[in-house]
Image 1: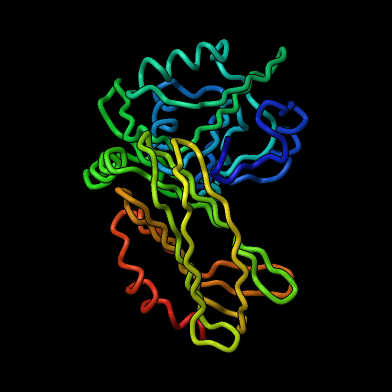
Image 2: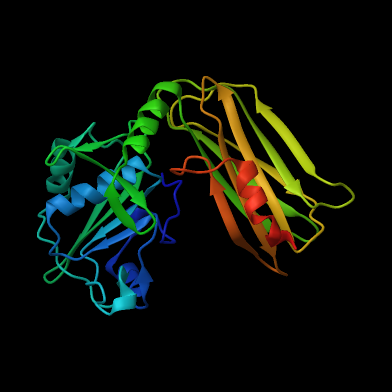
Length: 298
Protein backbone atom coordinates (compact mmCIF):
# COMPACT_ATOMS: atom_id res chain seq x y z
CA UNK A 1 0.00 0.00 0.00
CA UNK A 2 2.99 2.31 0.36
CA UNK A 3 4.01 4.13 -2.85
CA UNK A 4 6.25 6.31 -0.67
CA UNK A 5 9.70 4.98 0.34
CA UNK A 6 9.29 2.28 3.00
CA UNK A 7 12.06 1.50 5.55
CA UNK A 8 11.49 -2.23 6.10
CA UNK A 9 11.92 -5.33 3.94
CA UNK A 10 8.73 -6.88 5.35
CA UNK A 11 5.18 -5.62 5.06
CA UNK A 12 3.93 -3.66 8.05
CA UNK A 13 1.71 -6.58 9.11
CA UNK A 14 4.73 -8.93 9.25
CA UNK A 15 6.94 -6.74 11.45
CA UNK A 16 8.28 -8.15 14.74
CA UNK A 17 10.22 -6.71 17.67
CA UNK A 18 13.32 -8.36 16.21
CA UNK A 19 12.88 -6.35 12.99
CA UNK A 20 12.60 -3.06 14.89
CA UNK A 21 15.52 -3.91 17.19
CA UNK A 22 17.71 -4.68 14.19
CA UNK A 23 16.58 -1.50 12.44
CA UNK A 24 17.45 0.71 15.43
CA UNK A 25 20.74 -1.08 16.13
CA UNK A 26 22.34 1.68 14.06
CA UNK A 27 21.61 5.39 13.76
CA UNK A 28 18.40 6.11 11.87
CA UNK A 29 17.54 9.61 10.72
CA UNK A 30 14.10 11.08 10.11
CA UNK A 31 13.35 12.23 6.56
CA UNK A 32 10.55 13.29 4.22
CA UNK A 33 8.79 9.94 4.64
CA UNK A 34 9.85 8.81 8.13
CA UNK A 35 9.15 10.12 11.65
CA UNK A 36 10.11 8.66 15.05
CA UNK A 37 8.34 9.34 18.34
CA UNK A 38 9.25 7.88 21.73
CA UNK A 39 6.59 6.38 23.98
CA UNK A 40 6.07 9.65 25.88
CA UNK A 41 4.67 11.47 22.83
CA UNK A 42 1.30 13.21 23.22
CA UNK A 43 -1.69 12.70 20.94
CA UNK A 44 -1.43 16.32 19.76
CA UNK A 45 1.99 15.59 18.22
CA UNK A 46 0.71 12.38 16.63
CA UNK A 47 -2.16 14.27 14.99
CA UNK A 48 0.32 16.81 13.63
CA UNK A 49 2.60 14.16 12.09
CA UNK A 50 -0.23 12.11 10.58
CA UNK A 51 -1.87 15.23 9.13
CA UNK A 52 1.44 16.35 7.62
CA UNK A 53 2.07 12.99 5.92
CA UNK A 54 -1.51 12.87 4.60
CA UNK A 55 -1.11 16.32 3.07
CA UNK A 56 2.29 15.59 1.48
CA UNK A 57 3.71 12.37 0.00
CA UNK A 58 2.80 9.94 2.78
CA UNK A 59 5.18 8.25 5.18
CA UNK A 60 5.74 5.94 8.14
CA UNK A 61 5.34 7.00 11.79
CA UNK A 62 6.86 4.84 14.56
CA UNK A 63 5.52 5.47 18.08
CA UNK A 64 7.67 3.87 20.77
CA UNK A 65 10.94 4.43 18.90
CA UNK A 66 14.18 5.04 20.83
CA UNK A 67 14.54 8.54 22.24
CA UNK A 68 16.24 11.01 19.93
CA UNK A 69 19.93 11.71 20.46
CA UNK A 70 20.44 15.11 22.04
CA UNK A 71 23.78 16.13 20.56
CA UNK A 72 23.46 19.29 18.40
CA UNK A 73 24.11 17.57 15.07
CA UNK A 74 21.97 14.49 15.78
CA UNK A 75 18.53 16.11 15.67
CA UNK A 76 15.98 13.61 14.39
CA UNK A 77 18.36 10.65 14.87
CA UNK A 78 17.42 7.56 16.90
CA UNK A 79 19.38 4.49 17.98
CA UNK A 80 19.04 1.97 20.79
CA UNK A 81 16.22 0.53 22.87
CA UNK A 82 12.56 0.82 21.99
CA UNK A 83 10.27 2.68 24.41
CA UNK A 84 6.76 2.10 25.75
CA UNK A 85 3.81 4.01 24.32
CA UNK A 86 0.94 4.95 26.63
CA UNK A 87 -1.71 4.29 23.96
CA UNK A 88 -3.67 1.14 24.77
CA UNK A 89 -4.54 -0.33 21.40
CA UNK A 90 -4.83 0.15 17.64
CA UNK A 91 -8.49 1.05 18.15
CA UNK A 92 -7.48 3.80 20.59
CA UNK A 93 -5.14 5.36 18.03
CA UNK A 94 -7.68 4.98 15.20
CA UNK A 95 -10.38 6.68 17.31
CA UNK A 96 -8.16 9.70 17.98
CA UNK A 97 -7.21 10.01 14.31
CA UNK A 98 -10.74 9.63 12.94
CA UNK A 99 -12.27 12.04 15.50
CA UNK A 100 -9.60 14.75 15.44
CA UNK A 101 -8.59 14.94 11.76
CA UNK A 102 -11.01 16.11 9.08
CA UNK A 103 -11.66 14.60 6.59
CA UNK A 104 -10.91 11.35 8.49
CA UNK A 105 -7.71 9.69 7.22
CA UNK A 106 -8.34 7.03 4.54
CA UNK A 107 -6.37 3.79 4.10
CA UNK A 108 -4.17 3.93 7.20
CA UNK A 109 -2.42 0.73 8.27
CA UNK A 110 -1.58 0.47 11.97
CA UNK A 111 0.13 -2.40 13.78
CA UNK A 112 0.90 -2.75 17.49
CA UNK A 113 3.79 -4.73 19.01
CA UNK A 114 3.51 -5.15 22.77
CA UNK A 115 5.16 -7.00 25.66
CA UNK A 116 5.74 -6.27 29.36
CA UNK A 117 8.27 -3.46 28.78
CA UNK A 118 7.54 -2.21 25.26
CA UNK A 119 4.52 -0.94 23.38
CA UNK A 120 5.18 0.17 19.81
CA UNK A 121 2.88 1.33 17.02
CA UNK A 122 3.91 1.49 13.36
CA UNK A 123 1.59 3.56 11.16
CA UNK A 124 1.81 3.50 7.36
CA UNK A 125 0.24 6.71 6.04
CA UNK A 126 -0.34 7.07 2.29
CA UNK A 127 -0.62 10.41 0.53
CA UNK A 128 -4.31 11.24 0.69
CA UNK A 129 -6.64 11.95 -2.25
CA UNK A 130 -8.85 13.83 0.24
CA UNK A 131 -6.15 16.36 1.21
CA UNK A 132 -6.00 18.88 2.74
CA UNK A 133 -6.65 17.35 6.17
CA UNK A 134 -7.16 19.66 9.13
CA UNK A 135 -6.33 18.94 12.78
CA UNK A 136 -9.50 19.91 14.62
CA UNK A 137 -7.84 20.48 18.01
CA UNK A 138 -6.08 23.61 16.79
CA UNK A 139 -7.68 24.22 13.38
CA UNK A 140 -4.33 23.90 11.56
CA UNK A 141 -3.28 22.18 8.34
CA UNK A 142 0.18 20.58 8.46
CA UNK A 143 2.64 19.72 5.70
CA UNK A 144 5.74 17.50 5.62
CA UNK A 145 8.83 19.45 4.60
CA UNK A 146 12.01 17.34 4.69
CA UNK A 147 12.36 15.87 8.18
CA UNK A 148 9.96 18.40 9.74
CA UNK A 149 6.17 18.71 9.96
CA UNK A 150 5.10 22.36 9.92
CA UNK A 151 1.91 24.40 9.47
CA UNK A 152 0.98 24.47 5.78
CA UNK A 153 1.25 27.78 3.96
CA UNK A 154 -1.84 29.34 2.38
CA UNK A 155 -0.61 28.55 -1.14
CA UNK A 156 -0.02 24.91 -0.23
CA UNK A 157 -3.55 24.55 1.14
CA UNK A 158 -4.95 26.20 -2.00
CA UNK A 159 -3.03 23.75 -4.18
CA UNK A 160 -4.36 20.76 -2.23
CA UNK A 161 -7.95 21.93 -2.67
CA UNK A 162 -7.27 22.42 -6.40
CA UNK A 163 -5.89 18.87 -6.66
CA UNK A 164 -9.03 17.52 -5.03
CA UNK A 165 -11.28 19.36 -7.50
CA UNK A 166 -9.27 18.86 -10.69
CA UNK A 167 -7.87 15.38 -10.21
CA UNK A 168 -4.48 14.41 -8.88
CA UNK A 169 -1.85 12.09 -10.33
CA UNK A 170 1.10 10.88 -8.28
CA UNK A 171 4.34 10.05 -10.12
CA UNK A 172 6.82 7.49 -8.80
CA UNK A 173 10.12 7.00 -10.67
CA UNK A 174 12.83 4.37 -10.20
CA UNK A 175 16.09 4.47 -12.14
CA UNK A 176 18.29 1.36 -12.52
CA UNK A 177 21.54 0.90 -14.40
CA UNK A 178 21.67 -1.93 -16.93
CA UNK A 179 24.53 -3.12 -19.15
CA UNK A 180 24.17 -0.54 -21.91
CA UNK A 181 21.12 1.52 -20.95
CA UNK A 182 19.30 3.03 -18.01
CA UNK A 183 15.94 1.52 -17.08
CA UNK A 184 13.39 4.10 -15.92
CA UNK A 185 10.35 2.56 -14.19
CA UNK A 186 7.34 4.91 -14.16
CA UNK A 187 4.28 4.49 -11.94
CA UNK A 188 1.34 6.90 -12.26
CA UNK A 189 -1.41 6.56 -9.64
CA UNK A 190 -4.75 8.38 -9.60
CA UNK A 191 -5.16 9.80 -6.09
CA UNK A 192 -8.36 11.65 -6.97
CA UNK A 193 -11.93 10.42 -6.62
CA UNK A 194 -12.39 11.61 -10.22
CA UNK A 195 -11.79 9.12 -13.01
CA UNK A 196 -8.59 9.94 -14.89
CA UNK A 197 -8.81 9.84 -18.69
CA UNK A 198 -6.36 10.19 -21.58
CA UNK A 199 -3.33 9.91 -19.31
CA UNK A 200 0.10 10.20 -20.80
CA UNK A 201 3.72 10.84 -20.02
CA UNK A 202 6.68 12.37 -21.81
CA UNK A 203 10.28 11.46 -21.00
CA UNK A 204 13.14 13.68 -22.14
CA UNK A 205 16.82 12.99 -21.58
CA UNK A 206 20.16 14.47 -22.67
CA UNK A 207 22.87 13.79 -23.68
CA UNK A 208 22.21 10.36 -25.25
CA UNK A 209 23.90 8.19 -27.86
CA UNK A 210 23.88 9.46 -31.45
CA UNK A 211 21.28 12.17 -30.81
CA UNK A 212 21.05 15.52 -29.08
CA UNK A 213 17.96 14.65 -27.04
CA UNK A 214 16.04 11.44 -26.29
CA UNK A 215 12.24 11.83 -26.20
CA UNK A 216 9.53 9.21 -25.57
CA UNK A 217 5.83 10.03 -25.32
CA UNK A 218 3.14 7.46 -24.47
CA UNK A 219 -0.59 7.45 -23.73
CA UNK A 220 -2.68 5.09 -21.64
CA UNK A 221 -5.88 4.49 -23.60
CA UNK A 222 -7.92 3.34 -20.61
CA UNK A 223 -9.37 5.13 -17.61
CA UNK A 224 -7.85 5.05 -14.12
CA UNK A 225 -10.21 5.06 -11.16
CA UNK A 226 -9.15 6.18 -7.69
CA UNK A 227 -6.00 4.37 -6.44
CA UNK A 228 -5.51 2.57 -9.75
CA UNK A 229 -2.09 2.96 -11.34
CA UNK A 230 -0.38 2.64 -14.70
CA UNK A 231 3.15 1.24 -14.72
CA UNK A 232 5.60 1.32 -17.59
CA UNK A 233 9.34 1.20 -18.34
CA UNK A 234 11.57 3.21 -20.63
CA UNK A 235 15.12 2.28 -21.70
CA UNK A 236 17.37 5.32 -22.00
CA UNK A 237 20.50 5.04 -24.21
CA UNK A 238 22.76 7.33 -22.19
CA UNK A 239 26.15 8.43 -23.54
CA UNK A 240 27.65 10.34 -20.63
CA UNK A 241 28.44 9.84 -16.96
CA UNK A 242 26.05 12.69 -16.18
CA UNK A 243 22.60 13.17 -17.71
CA UNK A 244 19.41 15.17 -17.29
CA UNK A 245 16.02 13.39 -17.17
CA UNK A 246 12.60 15.06 -17.19
CA UNK A 247 9.23 13.31 -16.92
CA UNK A 248 5.92 15.13 -17.50
CA UNK A 249 2.53 13.51 -16.80
CA UNK A 250 -0.77 14.84 -18.07
CA UNK A 251 -4.39 13.90 -18.66
CA UNK A 252 -7.90 15.17 -19.24
CA UNK A 253 -8.97 17.59 -16.46
CA UNK A 254 -5.79 16.80 -14.52
CA UNK A 255 -3.03 19.06 -13.31
CA UNK A 256 0.17 18.45 -15.30
CA UNK A 257 3.06 17.43 -13.05
CA UNK A 258 6.77 17.32 -13.77
CA UNK A 259 9.68 15.53 -12.11
CA UNK A 260 13.26 16.06 -13.22
CA UNK A 261 16.77 15.23 -12.07
CA UNK A 262 20.43 15.56 -12.91
CA UNK A 263 21.92 12.09 -12.50
CA UNK A 264 25.48 10.81 -12.09
CA UNK A 265 26.04 7.29 -13.43
CA UNK A 266 28.63 5.00 -11.84
CA UNK A 267 29.52 1.41 -12.74
CA UNK A 268 26.76 -0.22 -10.72
CA UNK A 269 24.51 2.57 -9.50
CA UNK A 270 23.13 6.04 -10.10
CA UNK A 271 23.23 9.13 -7.87
CA UNK A 272 20.83 12.09 -7.92
CA UNK A 273 22.74 15.39 -8.06
CA UNK A 274 19.73 17.74 -8.12
CA UNK A 275 15.99 17.06 -8.24
CA UNK A 276 12.86 18.97 -9.23
CA UNK A 277 9.15 18.43 -8.60
CA UNK A 278 6.55 20.88 -9.86
CA UNK A 279 4.35 20.27 -6.78
CA UNK A 280 6.95 21.71 -4.41
CA UNK A 281 6.03 25.08 -3.00
CA UNK A 282 7.61 27.97 -4.95
CA UNK A 283 9.04 25.52 -7.50
CA UNK A 284 10.44 27.33 -10.57
CA UNK A 285 9.62 26.19 -14.08
CA UNK A 286 11.51 23.11 -15.36
CA UNK A 287 13.34 25.40 -17.80
CA UNK A 288 14.65 27.56 -14.95
CA UNK A 289 15.65 24.43 -12.99
CA UNK A 290 17.58 23.10 -15.99
CA UNK A 291 19.33 26.39 -16.78
CA UNK A 292 20.30 26.87 -13.13
CA UNK A 293 21.81 23.39 -12.79
CA UNK A 294 23.07 22.51 -16.29
CA UNK A 295 26.65 23.04 -15.11
CA UNK A 296 26.24 19.60 -13.47
CA UNK A 297 26.46 18.02 -16.94
CA UNK A 298 30.01 19.29 -17.42
